Image (tube, rainbow, N blue to C red; front, top):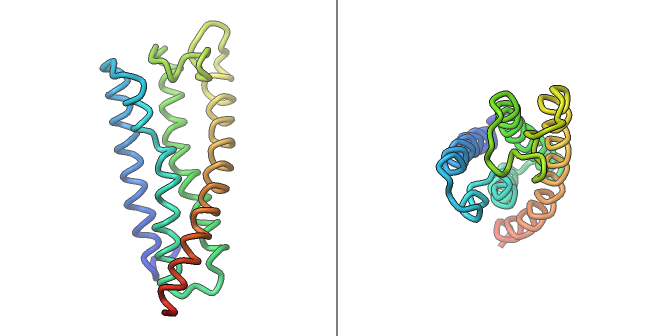
Length: 156
């Protein structure tokens, strides 16, 4: 992705934020923090914020195909963040982490009956697929609205 319009910089900055959020959440989970606090520190919340910044950069650049650029940017952002999260699931399986998020009964990949194929590949890949699709759909809606609003402000 070209950085001619600042979109690459925005992407990089939000990927750094996502990595920090993932580490903070792991620390909170291992320290026994309440579930609600762990939920606050999830990368999923970023999927509601990031599209606004992407859309604003795209509109400011005068991109000829803003929705295509937005879709591609959201896809790669979601893919990169979910790959980071997938690594935590793989580590959880490898080290039998007993925090609630990783337990089989909560949709995780740690527990009796989870095979190495499930723990290392199937469950993390399923999570990647579901979250990338959800993040792009959510992001396109939020980004479209932001594009409309930002576009009107530029013409005013």
